[in-house]
Length: 166
Image (cartoon, rainbow, N blue to C red; front, side):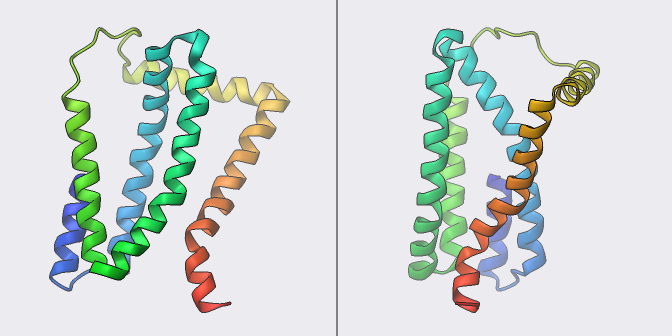
């Protein structure tokens, strides 16, 4: 994501930033989050142990929701005060800081076996089969997909809708 922000900052500073480039960056961010979220949550569970995983996940969700509130507010202030380039510059700083913090951690012995591609595909297939066989899980997953598909884009587009429609 640091690289994406660097590219977008360069495009913004040279006046070459276009909507299609932002859309590609959004897709790349979505792909990164698709990988990052389960990895982060697995690391969190490994770090706190099974007896505290519920509390840790609750705190993690609170943090995610707070950033969904604070991020657009901070982004709006930056956009107003310094233009679009300042938003990408802040992204570079934040992503760079997170990368530095991650890399500065001492190596730890993994508590789970290293993943391999065949095992990953098998685990995904088993997961889909398990969800299909359990009606409650199927409903929960479908509800999540529908909410993510329709809810989050609406939240992201709310300022545009407010400006152009209301």
